[in-house]
Length: 138
Image (cartoon, rainbow, N blue to C red; front, side, top):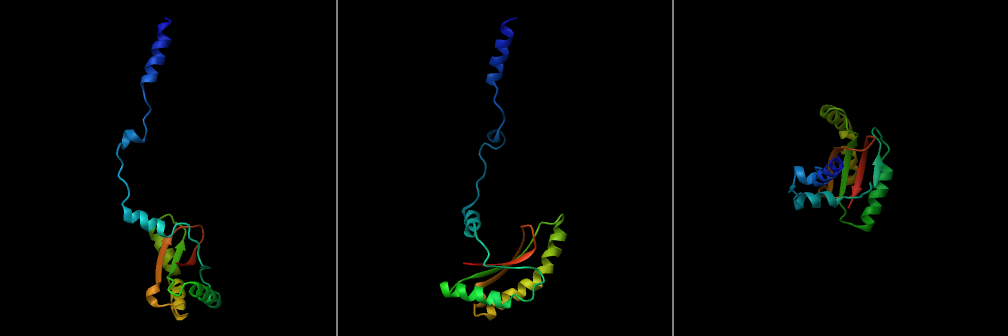
């Protein structure tokens, strides 16, 4: 009777709990291109944030662009339309398309401020908590 607890303890120590190594002993790693693309803008902060429907962004945007060009004349700008993730992909696409006109106007204003068109890109993504047009520079 005293051997039963000892046998129970010995049998439990022989077992191991399942972990990641049980389900995927050799997980596939990310390719180097994906890692480099992810880290290219890690920790970046927007140069300018424009709220949807704003029409008076011209002067502040022009000042920010001039300051960036004074530091780096070959600076590249990314204009990003950003909305929070919606319950369905169709709703996310509709929200992003609602920002397309403002984002395009911002990109055109940057080009009008003297930045070559090849140095301005226009992107869209679902992220964050509020809809906004973000302008990044590098």
